[in-house]
Length: 232
Image 1 (spheres, one colour):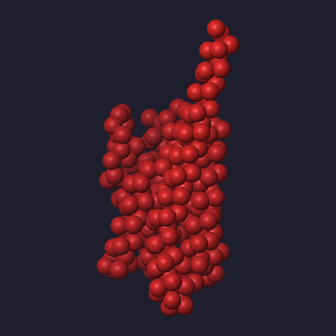
Image 2: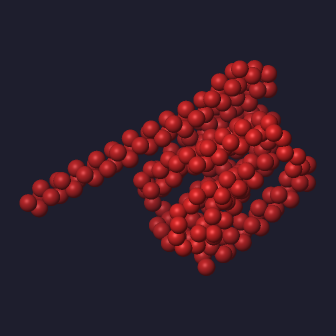
Image 3: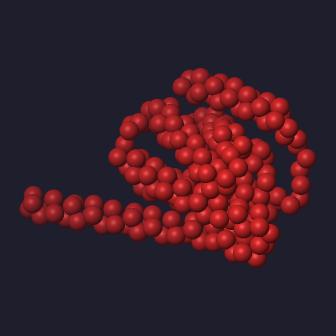
């Protein structure tokens, strides 16, 4: 039952976002040029980086190029279908969890696109996009979802992950601003080079989180050994 009211609100917000996009002139004219961008987004969405048991929002690396290369209105719909149709862990409320996750990303990116779309400076536009997306992700994906799942809402590990995500979002936004500027100047080769570094950045975050997880497990093992010695 805890899913019903949040889902109702998110559906209402999604309908409002879609209506605003249509009023602003968005049309569903699909162009083949964005297929590689969709493929990259799906790749980043499927790529899992987990710190402890908390999954980082890796698909932001796939979202930025879609905004940069002129298809921001498509992004919420791409995010919705990518999230809904990817594999979720089995268990109770599977459909509700899938729908919640899909609507979460639709609202997150839809609102972020709305607030950043009219900003002409690419760096500021992508910073606005990143901050709004991260704020909504924290509210819907962390706080509200923890409440729905009857878990501790404010958790130190959750805040650490959220901090890592914020740095990750802002860095990609600034880097995306550079890619946007190069694209506007018609520097195709340089633009491609910057774009190709996006999966590298995702990989760096993965390595950092893996080392952090190993360090945490090592610390726990040492604490357990010391506890056993004290009891002996």
